[in-house]
Length: 180
Image 1 (tube, rainbow, N blue to C red):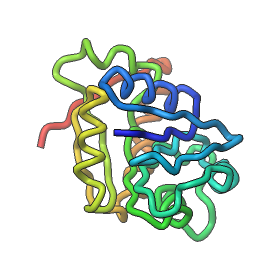
Image 2 (image 1 turned 90 degrees about the vertical axis):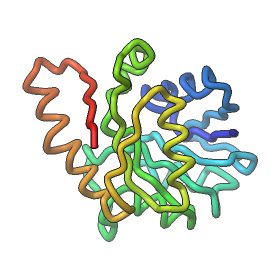
Image 3 (image 1 turned 90 degrees about the horizontal axis):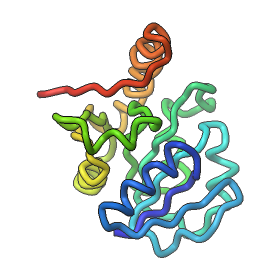
């Protein structure tokens, strides 16, 4: 699969590395943009406030399915219940929220962790198989929260549970596993 990762930081760069190792072709773009027209899927891994100004600089995103890996630590734009909804408004395609509740600093430890850590995701049904395949290819265990309307709850899970746990335990990143 050809993946366009928009964001070269810890999340975007780390996911790109994991997916290349799994055999995918990955193009990485920074805030300066690029051409994603040959990609099968977009992965948005930039600070939330930079989504509109960055995506406008990336060509070929219209109609492309996207995974929103951003988090709302800097707030959400008015008029959108989640950052995933904002991404959907800019691509006009199916969107999923994923990878936002997994600590990027631990990506290199995923392969040696058993059972595989969980990765929550929520989003449009049409993108479900693709999202779950990419979660597995990153070495994680996919756990679907619900449709795109659940993206807000997923963002709130990060803000109200994951980050307080992290802060309360000396800011040490951690994995979690959910079995349903």
